[in-house]
Image (cartoon, rainbow, N blue to C red; front, top):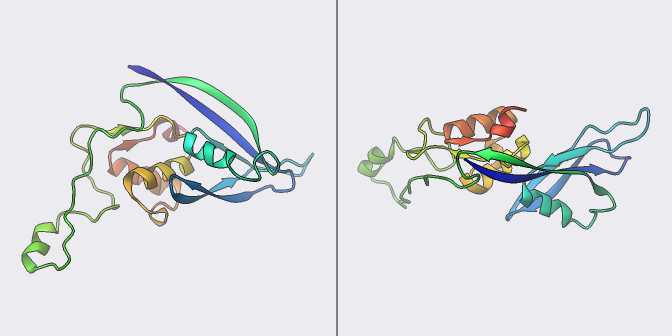
Amino acid sequence: MSTQKITSKVYRTSPNFKTYGAQIIVNGAEITIDFRGGHSSPYQKGGAFSTADPDIQKAIESRKDFGTFITLEYEETREVESDVKATEPQAEAPDIPVVDEFTEKETRDTEDVPPTGEPTDEAPLDGETVVMDVNTAQEAKAWLMKNKGVTARELPNKKAILEYAENNGVKFPLLETN
């Protein structure tokens, strides 16, 4: 068992924006983070976004409007126990050869190999990847895009994200309990 420190942060938009979709660049990939839950009664409060992903936190805090339009409302650091070192895959996906022109034999040999980025029913040979620093579906989506090469269109909602993760040997324990 190892312990790991995880810092969760809650960001909020200005009071005039109850919901807001902000575009950020995380490790070279453009993602949208959604600020939600703002209200105007009994007083105005902007939408909020929560994350424990340090890459997303850095991207938000690097925005020109951070500190004015988007502010840090709350920050909490906690220790989490883990059997597996977080965010480090134990087994890599097998290399799928790229062939410019398929012959009939090459097509037959690769029919049972799924294209890159599609879910499989097989778990990695050496176990599962446990990602402890993911709290939201958006963080899980960003992690899968970065580490598994899946596209945003393949992960339209939380159900699809959890299904893809399960089929590819990835566990998000903090997300699955929310």
